[in-house]
Length: 386
Ligand SMILES: *Cc1c(COP(=O)(O)O)cnc(C)c1O
Image 1 (cartoon, rainbow, N blue to C red):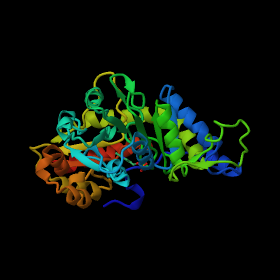
Image 2 (image 1 turned 135 degrees about the vertical axis):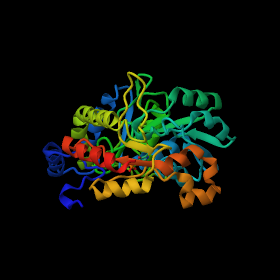
Image 3 (image 1 turned 90 degrees about the horizontal axis):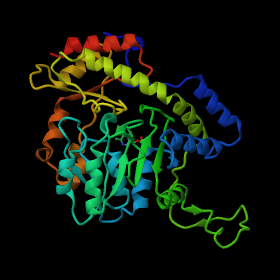
């Protein structure tokens, strides 16, 4: 049995004194809502991705996905195409707009959306494709962009796991998608507590998202007609949302972004050791990025192979008994009551995601993990996976 003291959580945020100082600085500045820290964070984030981008800080990736779909014009009766093996946030935002989700099965090797099944899911109502870089491994983006171009669809990337990841040498965020959305939720590759960032190369989309992020307020409407806009004047041009980031979160994000290169290195080191030491167990190890490409290693998802004797639930229980937390990414959306019932979905329609789901579990992978903790996780796996 484990004691609470040596229990290894599934994730633990890596927040140090520099972050605490930065948040305190924001709090002492007298400006706690969106302000100089958030604006600097946006600029630094865009620069981290190589520049040439508009970066729009929001209070969650879910908010960012909503803004992006709204900005590209997804609306009532439209459809968006997304993987079934994702978090509900990817597609719930389509429902906010009165649109529907068309779910697609997974690629058996990567567990990303199976790009070869996307075209069959396109209908006259399809407006956008929402690839999710599962676990931090980029989707087959050249194929997805090719399909989108041929069918006149927008691509909005759910990059909640993909900071940073590359696709054919290009950082996620720099591809020719309408928008790309990152998450700074507590367990992501960097955190602002809650928060997210939308990036786009399209000025008009950026302008729309900025207006909709804050109540549909436009401060430039007047500027077009007069250079003497009084500072108190604003116009409401749409029923917008309240999705802006606080300056405490922005200050926290700036420090986390500075530490991101170290975080990436540590995640790669931890993932590399798992890959090396778990090879001989009856497990399907997570797919690696092609040579020279970056995997963000947000998640480390294992699947029991066909010859494994233990079940997924036995392994999860055994790890828990050994003091190691796990998770499952994800209960596929086609199994979730809301999505299943709305679209009358059956497991047989998603054989790859379904089989993966039955055999998958995610083990802890976080930068604040010690080498000793990782040794314990590996030892526990060797004891329970048969
Ligand atoms: C975490 C996550 C989100 C949502 O991010 P929030 O910042 O919590 O809104 C969306 N999609 C995926 C795939 C995620 O893992």
